[in-house]
Each structure stands twice: as structure tokens, then as C-alpha cells.
Length: 194
Image (cartoon, rainbow, N blue to C red; front, side, top):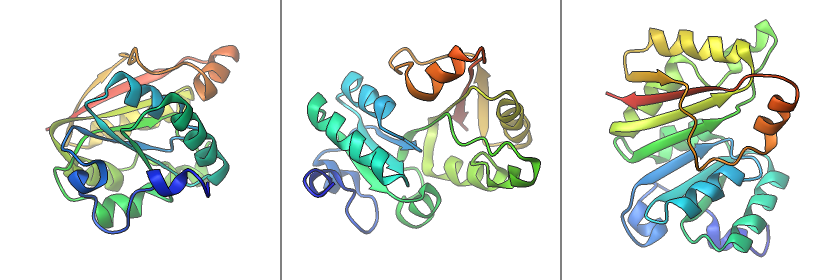
């Protein structure tokens, strides 16, 4: 963290892509990036895009920084912290071209369902931060979370939703591989902002 974070940390204040990346390309925000395999893979497969990976788990961010350094991707920055305050306070409307939410914490207990990221208020926030035509990609291997996503997305009028299209650039390690090993099905949601 001490060595690699300073060169990749999202600077304080509003997200101004030209200032952060030194150019203006498509901006992709990954929420809950974990150890960064998907964010790094996207950055490597899309060198024209600028990726901001967000996670609260410091050891995961440290692994991501090391892996990004080893992969040599220059178009990846990180934010150590919660995505909602970042989106609310630092990302202007119509800034993002895509948001990725892969295998979020499903908060499986009914009393904890309100903690799930996909909720009406967060979908409204994401819809406002995405450019028209921008995409929210969600993947989960937990059936109850997939059903929760279907319900929340159906109740929200900010997105056109297509199910079942897995991005070919996303590695299948981590939670996805674990879920498949345990016989679970991965549900994919591609949500296009209206």
C-alpha cells in the first residue's frame, strides 16, 4: 500500500477524469473490486477506457495494486472506501460510461436485505451518474440475490435490462469459480441507462 497506492489512488475532491488519467476516455467504475481480477482484466482488454476500482477491504486493495503493477495497466485507479459516498459526493451526473458490480455481498439474512447494494436509491444514484446509454453490469451466483436484483430493476424505470450475457473479458476466478464449484448458477444483468 505504501509503495503502490500513491501512484494509483483516486485524488481527493471531485472525479475529473482528465485530471486523474491525463486524458478523456470512457470511465468505468467497479464497485467491490476485491483483489481486482475483473478490474485489471477490463483495464487490460480496454486500454482506451479509464477504470476506477472501489473497495473497502484494504488487504484486497493491496493485492489488486500488486497485480495491476505486475500486469502493467496504466488505466486503473483505486479508491479505498465505500462506493455510495464516492458516487454521491464526488462523481458528477453523466460522468460514467459503465458501472460493474460483480458478486456483491448478498446479505442473505432477510433482516439484512436492506444492506444489499442493489436498491431503489442506489439504482437512482447510478442512473444519474451514468451517461445515457451507459451500462450497469451485475453478476451474482446467489439465487436469492438474483431474484432481489430482478425485483429491484423491474421496479425502477431508469434501465433497460437484459439477462444472461456474460462479458467475455471477465476472468472466472474468485467468487464466480467458487460458486460454480458448489453447483450454483451465475446470473448476469446488463442494464442500460435510459
